[in-house]
Image 1 (cartoon, rainbow over the protein chains, first blue to last red):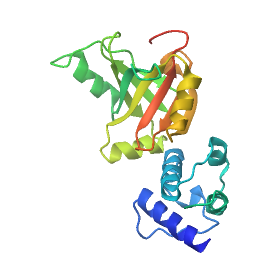
Image 2: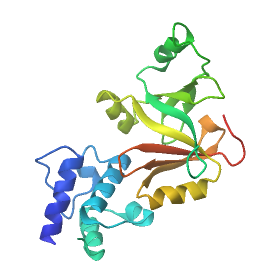
Image 3: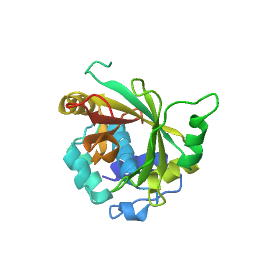
Length: 79
Length: 141
Protein backbone atom coordinates (compact mmCIF):
# COMPACT_ATOMS: atom_id res chain seq x y z
CA UNK A 1 0.00 0.00 0.00
CA UNK A 2 2.91 2.36 0.77
CA UNK A 3 4.20 1.93 -2.77
CA UNK A 4 0.76 2.69 -4.15
CA UNK A 5 0.51 5.87 -2.06
CA UNK A 6 3.91 6.98 -3.34
CA UNK A 7 2.93 6.44 -6.96
CA UNK A 8 -0.47 8.09 -6.47
CA UNK A 9 1.25 11.03 -4.77
CA UNK A 10 3.44 11.42 -7.85
CA UNK A 11 0.30 11.55 -10.02
CA UNK A 12 -1.28 14.18 -7.76
CA UNK A 13 1.89 16.29 -7.89
CA UNK A 14 1.98 16.06 -11.67
CA UNK A 15 -1.71 16.83 -12.20
CA UNK A 16 -1.77 19.72 -9.72
CA UNK A 17 1.71 20.90 -10.77
CA UNK A 18 2.89 21.02 -7.16
CA UNK A 19 6.06 19.12 -6.28
CA UNK A 20 5.51 19.71 -2.56
CA UNK A 21 1.96 18.36 -2.43
CA UNK A 22 1.45 15.82 0.37
CA UNK A 23 -1.59 13.55 0.49
CA UNK A 24 -2.80 10.96 2.96
CA UNK A 25 -5.68 8.51 3.16
CA UNK A 26 -7.89 11.19 4.69
CA UNK A 27 -7.21 13.82 2.00
CA UNK A 28 -10.37 14.98 0.20
CA UNK A 29 -11.13 17.43 -2.59
CA UNK A 30 -11.76 20.10 0.04
CA UNK A 31 -8.10 19.92 1.07
CA UNK A 32 -6.69 20.83 -2.35
CA UNK A 33 -7.80 24.17 -3.76
CA UNK A 34 -7.76 23.19 -7.43
CA UNK A 35 -9.45 19.80 -7.00
CA UNK A 36 -12.66 20.38 -8.94
CA UNK A 37 -14.70 18.00 -11.10
CA UNK A 38 -12.46 18.35 -14.15
CA UNK A 39 -9.26 17.92 -12.14
CA UNK A 40 -10.87 14.88 -10.51
CA UNK A 41 -11.33 13.26 -13.91
CA UNK A 42 -7.79 14.28 -14.92
CA UNK A 43 -6.49 12.54 -11.81
CA UNK A 44 -8.49 9.42 -12.55
CA UNK A 45 -7.23 9.22 -16.13
CA UNK A 46 -3.61 9.67 -15.06
CA UNK A 47 -3.96 7.03 -12.32
CA UNK A 48 -5.50 4.66 -14.87
CA UNK A 49 -2.52 5.23 -17.17
CA UNK A 50 0.00 4.86 -14.35
CA UNK A 51 -1.42 1.61 -12.99
CA UNK A 52 -2.85 0.14 -16.19
CA UNK A 53 -6.34 -0.12 -14.72
CA UNK A 54 -9.80 1.24 -15.54
CA UNK A 55 -12.39 2.77 -13.22
CA UNK A 56 -16.12 2.73 -13.92
CA UNK A 57 -18.12 5.96 -13.93
CA UNK A 58 -19.84 4.86 -10.71
CA UNK A 59 -16.52 4.21 -9.00
CA UNK A 60 -15.23 7.63 -10.06
CA UNK A 61 -18.34 9.37 -8.79
CA UNK A 62 -18.40 7.56 -5.44
CA UNK A 63 -14.81 8.17 -4.33
CA UNK A 64 -14.84 10.16 -1.09
CA UNK A 65 -11.15 10.48 -0.22
CA UNK A 66 -7.65 9.35 -1.17
CA UNK A 67 -7.96 6.28 1.05
CA UNK A 68 -10.88 4.97 -0.99
CA UNK A 69 -8.92 5.68 -4.16
CA UNK A 70 -5.92 3.72 -2.86
CA UNK A 71 -8.15 0.81 -1.85
CA UNK A 72 -9.72 0.77 -5.30
CA UNK A 73 -6.35 0.84 -7.05
CA UNK A 74 -5.14 -2.03 -4.87
CA UNK A 75 -8.32 -4.02 -5.50
CA UNK A 76 -7.84 -3.73 -9.24
CA UNK A 77 -4.36 -5.24 -9.03
CA UNK A 78 -2.11 -2.40 -10.20
CA UNK A 79 0.80 -3.17 -12.50
CA UNK B 1 -18.26 13.30 -40.01
CA UNK B 2 -16.52 10.94 -37.60
CA UNK B 3 -16.60 7.17 -37.45
CA UNK B 4 -19.64 7.05 -35.19
CA UNK B 5 -21.59 9.73 -37.03
CA UNK B 6 -20.48 12.74 -35.01
CA UNK B 7 -20.40 16.09 -36.76
CA UNK B 8 -18.32 18.98 -35.50
CA UNK B 9 -20.76 21.69 -34.47
CA UNK B 10 -18.62 24.25 -32.68
CA UNK B 11 -15.29 25.18 -31.21
CA UNK B 12 -15.64 26.39 -27.63
CA UNK B 13 -13.55 29.48 -26.79
CA UNK B 14 -13.31 31.26 -23.47
CA UNK B 15 -13.61 35.02 -23.36
CA UNK B 16 -13.40 37.43 -20.45
CA UNK B 17 -16.09 39.73 -21.83
CA UNK B 18 -18.71 38.40 -24.23
CA UNK B 19 -19.81 41.78 -25.59
CA UNK B 20 -16.24 42.82 -26.37
CA UNK B 21 -15.54 39.51 -28.06
CA UNK B 22 -18.74 39.69 -30.11
CA UNK B 23 -17.90 43.22 -31.24
CA UNK B 24 -14.91 41.79 -33.06
CA UNK B 25 -17.26 39.59 -35.11
CA UNK B 26 -19.97 42.17 -35.79
CA UNK B 27 -17.74 44.28 -38.02
CA UNK B 28 -14.30 44.28 -39.56
CA UNK B 29 -12.44 41.46 -41.28
CA UNK B 30 -14.01 38.73 -39.12
CA UNK B 31 -17.60 39.95 -39.50
CA UNK B 32 -20.04 37.01 -39.39
CA UNK B 33 -23.54 36.33 -38.10
CA UNK B 34 -23.66 36.29 -34.29
CA UNK B 35 -26.40 35.11 -31.94
CA UNK B 36 -27.68 37.01 -28.95
CA UNK B 37 -25.84 36.26 -25.67
CA UNK B 38 -27.58 33.56 -23.67
CA UNK B 39 -27.27 33.16 -19.91
CA UNK B 40 -26.85 29.50 -18.98
CA UNK B 41 -28.05 28.79 -15.48
CA UNK B 42 -27.40 25.83 -13.22
CA UNK B 43 -23.97 24.37 -12.64
CA UNK B 44 -22.42 25.81 -15.81
CA UNK B 45 -22.79 29.47 -14.86
CA UNK B 46 -21.69 30.88 -18.20
CA UNK B 47 -22.93 33.25 -20.88
CA UNK B 48 -22.56 32.06 -24.43
CA UNK B 49 -23.06 33.25 -28.00
CA UNK B 50 -22.41 31.57 -31.31
CA UNK B 51 -20.51 33.06 -34.22
CA UNK B 52 -20.67 31.92 -37.82
CA UNK B 53 -22.95 30.78 -40.59
CA UNK B 54 -25.58 28.38 -39.18
CA UNK B 55 -24.74 25.76 -41.78
CA UNK B 56 -21.04 25.76 -40.92
CA UNK B 57 -18.99 24.92 -37.86
CA UNK B 58 -19.56 27.65 -35.31
CA UNK B 59 -17.45 29.39 -32.70
CA UNK B 60 -19.01 29.23 -29.24
CA UNK B 61 -17.85 32.18 -27.19
CA UNK B 62 -18.09 31.34 -23.50
CA UNK B 63 -17.85 33.92 -20.74
CA UNK B 64 -17.54 32.14 -17.40
CA UNK B 65 -19.45 33.55 -14.46
CA UNK B 66 -17.51 34.59 -11.34
CA UNK B 67 -18.42 31.35 -9.55
CA UNK B 68 -17.31 29.04 -12.35
CA UNK B 69 -13.90 28.40 -10.81
CA UNK B 70 -12.72 25.88 -13.37
CA UNK B 71 -13.27 28.09 -16.40
CA UNK B 72 -12.06 31.18 -14.54
CA UNK B 73 -8.81 29.35 -13.80
CA UNK B 74 -8.38 28.38 -17.44
CA UNK B 75 -8.98 31.96 -18.49
CA UNK B 76 -6.40 33.27 -16.01
CA UNK B 77 -3.88 30.77 -17.39
CA UNK B 78 -4.44 32.24 -20.84
CA UNK B 79 -6.44 29.31 -22.21
CA UNK B 80 -8.97 30.32 -24.85
CA UNK B 81 -9.83 27.28 -26.99
CA UNK B 82 -10.96 24.58 -24.56
CA UNK B 83 -13.50 22.22 -26.10
CA UNK B 84 -14.95 20.81 -29.30
CA UNK B 85 -18.72 20.32 -29.54
CA UNK B 86 -20.06 17.48 -31.69
CA UNK B 87 -23.62 16.68 -32.71
CA UNK B 88 -24.38 13.06 -31.85
CA UNK B 89 -27.25 11.49 -33.79
CA UNK B 90 -27.11 8.51 -31.41
CA UNK B 91 -25.86 9.86 -28.09
CA UNK B 92 -25.79 6.53 -26.15
CA UNK B 93 -23.71 4.88 -28.87
CA UNK B 94 -21.31 7.82 -29.05
CA UNK B 95 -20.99 7.87 -25.26
CA UNK B 96 -20.12 4.20 -25.22
CA UNK B 97 -17.46 4.73 -27.87
CA UNK B 98 -15.85 7.48 -25.81
CA UNK B 99 -15.93 5.40 -22.64
CA UNK B 100 -14.32 2.50 -24.48
CA UNK B 101 -11.57 4.86 -25.66
CA UNK B 102 -10.68 5.61 -22.04
CA UNK B 103 -12.48 8.94 -21.74
CA UNK B 104 -14.49 9.83 -18.63
CA UNK B 105 -17.64 11.91 -18.21
CA UNK B 106 -17.00 15.29 -16.59
CA UNK B 107 -20.52 16.70 -16.71
CA UNK B 108 -23.96 15.88 -18.04
CA UNK B 109 -26.81 18.38 -18.33
CA UNK B 110 -29.60 19.70 -20.51
CA UNK B 111 -28.33 22.85 -22.19
CA UNK B 112 -30.34 26.00 -22.75
CA UNK B 113 -27.90 26.75 -25.60
CA UNK B 114 -29.28 23.72 -27.46
CA UNK B 115 -33.00 23.93 -26.78
CA UNK B 116 -32.71 21.81 -23.65
CA UNK B 117 -31.09 18.89 -25.40
CA UNK B 118 -28.84 16.58 -23.40
CA UNK B 119 -25.14 17.41 -23.50
CA UNK B 120 -22.28 15.34 -22.12
CA UNK B 121 -18.76 16.63 -21.55
CA UNK B 122 -15.93 14.10 -21.73
CA UNK B 123 -12.26 14.40 -20.87
CA UNK B 124 -10.25 12.16 -23.19
CA UNK B 125 -7.05 10.33 -22.31
CA UNK B 126 -5.19 13.04 -24.25
CA UNK B 127 -6.66 15.73 -22.01
CA UNK B 128 -9.05 17.07 -24.64
CA UNK B 129 -12.50 18.27 -23.63
CA UNK B 130 -15.26 17.00 -25.90
CA UNK B 131 -18.94 17.99 -25.74
CA UNK B 132 -21.49 15.62 -27.23
CA UNK B 133 -24.85 17.18 -28.04
CA UNK B 134 -27.91 14.99 -28.52
CA UNK B 135 -28.92 15.50 -32.15
CA UNK B 136 -31.40 12.69 -32.35
CA UNK B 137 -34.35 14.97 -33.05
CA UNK B 138 -32.92 17.96 -34.90
CA UNK B 139 -29.70 18.70 -36.63
CA UNK B 140 -28.65 22.13 -35.51
CA UNK B 141 -29.35 24.98 -33.21
